[in-house]
Length: 326
Image 1 (cartoon, rainbow, N blue to C red):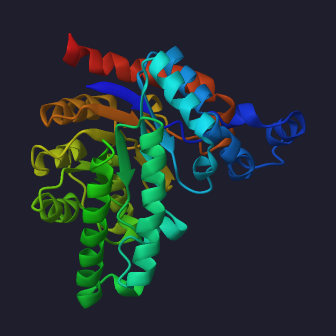
Image 2: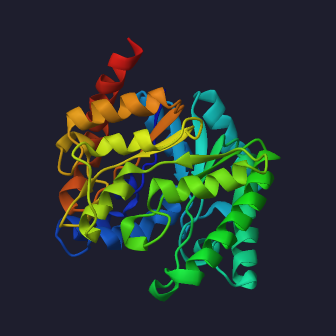
């Protein structure tokens, strides 16, 4: 199994101009201010993401396609450049498809809304194919709280299966393995592995190869949604059938503070080293091909130390993985 990254906002500090950097360091700009200011230009710089991955000694980059992003505006020259640099550096690529705003309507019970979301995601799948992505990751979508029960829930599941069936076929025609990722517990649906697996089973029953990008950090959010967590939370993987894994997401969660994606090696969340050792062993046994780390900086210190965090966390994970490849 290989190690990859979605850099989220860990490279954003490099894109601040001198005045914005001064204001950030002085506490006049928040992390959210930084993200909003530079995320489009940072996402566009696929070359930097690839070369950073190469320098870290990992061999995969997942591009963050959540909006706003620049990807549908890429020229043919831009796409060819991204493809060439990835190949030259032996870095494989995947794309995390948009999961907010219009892209979140894949499970909408209204056909017009659902249709618009599917057509938008198809444009991103075409972009992913043009730059040589092997995998794409899709969220199930979100709905209002008053649509999460009873008949509404059945309609939403039916809509998601319809969307996923169409997108899986579209992706397969372009050589892409489509993955469905579990929501957080706060989303109120499609957060539990059993729910996601039921959807995948129906779609795969139609002869379509669609996979489960399990996100353990998302599953851990159930602790703040008044739901039970296993004593060994990584053992939840045992409840997922074999044959569903290719790309897996790896991130942690800090309960009660609602901090997403903290640096794994700092052990700020629920996944300590012994949990990660068991977790990585379990997903290897399940056939996962690549684990994509999604660590993000949520406070000023982590932004400033992002380069150090990337190096230290990568070595920490490579050390754990090394025992399985020895």
